[in-house]
Image (cartoon, each protein chain N blue to C red):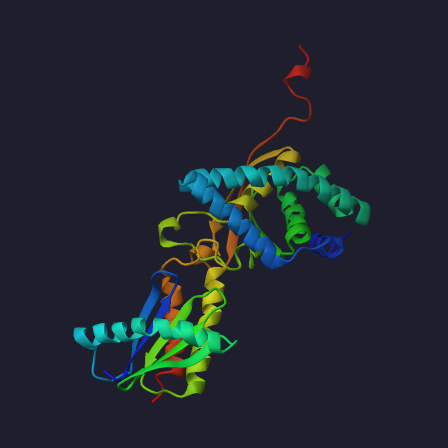
Length: 141
Length: 193
């Protein structure tokens, strides 16, 4: 299970986008219970995100919570949208690059006149690109 | 004899410009509003076509005035005087360059139809069509504009997008088909009895 990374984009009231990334050749898809636990950890970290947001003026908030072996890193966008990543101790650098690239993607998406702010992200193109970014930065063994 | 592309280029450089992102976002906001108001895809397209038409009938005046000033209207005037409908493709390419800054190619299909191909479309720079609107022709305004411009030159045409980058094609292509050549000038009131 620690080879699974969970990435969630959270808007004002609800998650807007979710993606799980598995290391290739790893232990297949994680079980239901582990997935639920992962989501729980991420959502409980949301309060801590708010707290950490006041501590720094940048957008990248690094690790805001640590549960067992799982870390939650956050990137807070200018529009108060939270990009959350659940991981098991990747390097700060690769996580920061990941967040920056996804943030760029998010900005381009929000320029689309058909996308309304704070609505779930359904674009398959966005999904494909996020996964490609994850492969590039997070899943190199 | 000045070519269409050089006329277009010179006029483009003289035009005052607006930020491309602002332009694209404004058009996008307008399409968004139309979607909220009209909901049905074909009504939205009709409305975009109508808007394009009223833009086109004004643009053609400006284009002809400015290009006549530039080059004593040499190649452009030829398009007006010439009997060949297909010469208007040159005029369209020059005006697309002047107003939108896009370089277009044309392919003559027959005496009464030709296609205009655009590689980049400034209206669609951030756009991705949502799945439930995959039928919408986002750039329909351009088609209406072409129709309006040619109508002022006494050509009644149909113009539609046959290829669109938003729908997966490599380029954007408009097909212009001549329906009829309109009678010169005056309306019914002035016809001899």
